Amino acid sequence: MLIKSAEFVMSNSDVAKCPKDRLPEYAFIGRSNVGKSSLINMLMQRKSLAKTSGRPGKTQLINHFLINKNWYLVDLPGYGYARVSKSAKKVFQKFITKYFEKREQMVLAFVLIDCRLEPQPIDLEFMEWMGEHEVPFCMVFTKADKLKPNALQKNVDAYLQKMLETWVETPQYFITSSSSSVGRDELLGYIGSINEQ
Ligand code: GTP
Ligand code: MG
Image 1 (cartoon, rainbow, N blue to C red):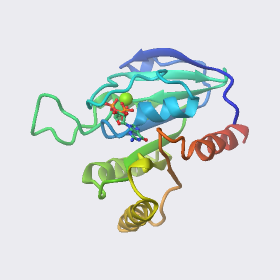
Image 2: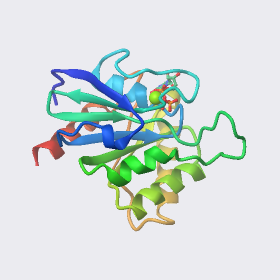
Image 3: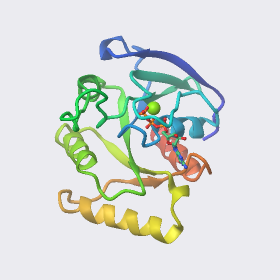
Image 4: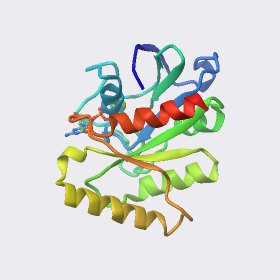
């Protein structure tokens, strides 16, 4: 898919105030610091369309970006990061779950997973929550540039194996790197093919 335009539209924490024009939208979700905002910038080939940071918790609101004037990318705050409370390790911020429950024009979510880590309970639980709520999602392994190809494939295979403990089949997945643009064509091609249906 050719990206002709990408523009920031709005930020807010209230699902009811998100754009009302019913264009299809694709949401990026995952733990804080996994690379959601960086991936959006990589896909759009724009350095700072979405704000990124080395410190977790950068994205705090629901951010809508209008792409090619006919679909939205949505950058969401990360889950699993609690600046104040140590006990609140597993926080899916209320408005994130509300977003997925209420946002009917959300076509597909991309759940981002750091390819370097073993399957993390919080990600597995989040994907289970998505399944229970019938929210369609794909997985996106991020930061592929940080691993050698063999180690990368090993981690991805192990992850998919782990998923099969609770899922009948594994979801569609992508391998990406925001620093080398790996996975860009595949991911945009996938979105394009859904938009054309
Ligand atoms: P929150 O908004 O805090 O939830 O984080 P986020 O998921 O949006 O992560 P963000 O895109 O801000 O990136 C977090 C850090 O990871 C930044 O320092 C990025 O430069 C780095 N990063 C993101 N993607 C990649 C990648 O593909 N490769 C490498 N090497 N670093 C990455
Ligand atoms: Mg972010």
